[in-house]
Amino acid sequence: FLGGPPVLSEPLPPYRSMGREELEAVSEVIRSDRLSGFYGSWGDEFFGGPMVRGLEQAWSERFGVRHAISVNSGTSGLFAAMGAIGIGPGDEVIVPPFTMSATVVAPLIYGGIPVFVDIEPDTFCLDPSAVRQAVTPRTKAILAVNLFGHPAGLSELMSIAEEHGIKLVEDNAQGPLSMNGERYAGTVGHIGVFSLNYHKHIHTGEGGMCVTNDDDLARRLQLIRNHAENIVEPLDIEDLTNLVGFNYRMTELSAAVGIEQLKKIDEHVSRREEVARQLTEGVTELEGLTPPRVRAGCRHVYYVWAMRYDEDAVGVGRERFSEALAAEGFPHSCGYMRPLYLLPLFQRRIAIGKQGYPFDLASPRYDKGLCPVAERMYEKELICFEPCMYDPS
Image (tube, rainbow, N blue to C red; front, side, top):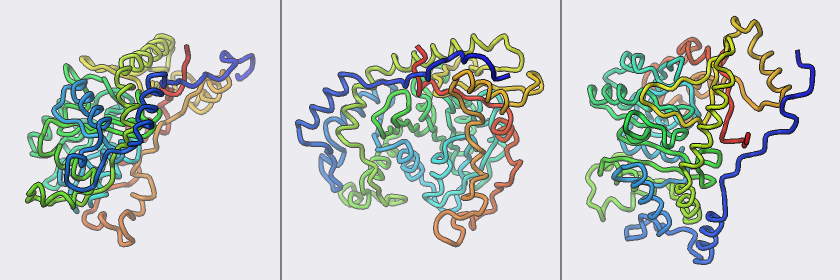
């Protein structure tokens, strides 16, 4: 079963996105001796230096939004987004169980209660019909993830949010340039959060971006990013909700890299799409292997190429099949993330302090079996390849 010479005799080389342009941009910042342009007090530099502002302007123009607010990570952006929309103790935030942990931890920072809702079996994103059933009078927001680079059902989720007077926040860390109809994913909700972590489509090492068309939300994101408590008096802000600020500021070095990377985003995204196309063509006729589905009217940008595996059709368990793939030299992973409600954080209901806050404010369900589709994908069906990590060409 595992005999014979491997198809890939050498490991796939890592994909490298940095070039001469990024090196020159960083060198220019270093020569300026101004590696950060922020001050944590009121004044022109409260909004950062020239590179930070240049990246924000370029990002706003590229994605067609009124405001782009840089942060030092996508995680920081999610935390700031929860603060900006006013999440408070006991507020419910609907989240998917199948994502990176930062998504579901973000509501906890402000005492919010993550409410897990199952995913669609073909896009692996939040199931809008299940979301609709999960809304209660305590629901304050939906935090949707455009997982693997495919948009969630954003139009329907936005309709649900508007119907109930709640906010839709998009975690678009994995989906820059993915499309939901005529709009970029990340720009459909009230706030969209992008990641510029080193293995994303484009990156600055660490970094992120929040986008919004709402002037008030933009200002609150800017405040939370940079020691908000010092700024409320100069701006005569009456609503102090969650304006206890943090330091989520991006450096001038990171922003300089980001400006150059953004110029190349089409090239980097298209490369992943081509890798995904070849993989999909290679398995389409093979029984028991289902390549990623792309919903009509959407663009998938393949942070992860996720194949569904049917062990009954193949006649071999997924783990044994994975061993065969590994023996052929093909880098991959099985299952993606274990559903996050199974983490000790949720099983033991210990987050902020030792007394169970904020879980003691409600009775959320975190038992096994809560999201059967997500559990099935993790345990039996998903096999993933990350085009961001390798250069198959």
